[in-house]
Image 1 (cartoon, rainbow, N blue to C red):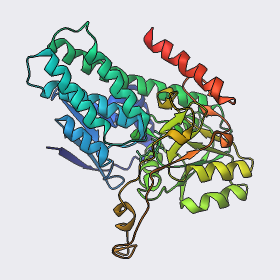
Image 2 (image 1 turned 30 degrees about the horizontal axis):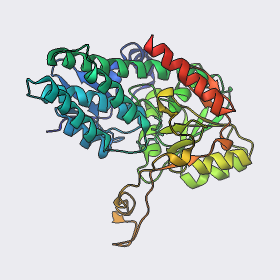
Image 3 (image 1 turned 90 degrees about the vertical axis):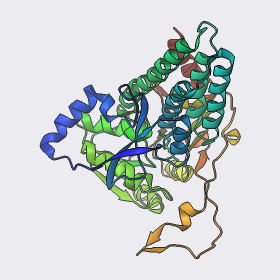
Length: 385
Ligand code: MRU
């Protein structure tokens, strides 16, 4: 069963903020959105559904629980989902009771299939599972005990690399931020959406930490309100000046010259630079272009899917309509009972609206078809060496 420890969110005073920031940097593991508990041999993650009111970590002891946690968005955000799924296979390796190597590998394949079916858009889920399953299939490991050890080791490497990659992304992106900038941001792309640090919000955190005087406009991000709930909570933790805006206000702020640069994340980026991200991102790209505002998705190379030539091939998750109809105002549902709803969770911003793509390697500019492939290949070569 999912079990939890509840702690009221601690408001950080200014004095302890710098100590906390320092500790979060050198002891990143305690701050991670998802991690492996080596004492209890289980997965531990922040239950993001409870934020910002309650900070709660849950313990997961089976891959089925990890699948539920991904589907029900205890954990969300492309890289965080990938890491959770990787640890899920480590749990499956513990759960399997067979002594037969073939049957064990089949158990792992079944677990991977189950985890793959949780959410369709973020490619990191499939990328992470493939990376772990390559270990499971590796003939060099010819007994169950060694596969168990290596699967956990690979999941841990993947999680550790995510943090390191995000810090490189953050440095590359922060170089684009000028002192005095107002930054527009969509969804949540911070520590909670990754293992730690974050992508677009990681860039913002880095610029703030570098002492740049910035202000962030956070789209509230309907319907799950990741911006108002999670990004705002993270800005509080890192002392980043911010204002929450309703999604529909973004165009107003851009047209009236109150936004200098836009940073968003990505759940999957196609080979031509088309970017799938949280629903509403496309409108931001179009309005940014119309108003001459630079628009930068922040994208670890693990989020680039070179097998898809354009964003039209990216599967778009459509979630349950209750996410919209069951929101309440003054204690009452906002929509008539039985109202029909369409609820796509992501959209695709065509590459013509993208100024550049911030990766851990460098900031990639058009032509994306050539330049994106070059940096992804360079990063993949680094991992295999
Ligand atoms: O539906 P979610 O909350 O998983 O969507 C998250 C996003 O769209 C993020 O912006 C995205 O994962 C990219 S940044 C890590």
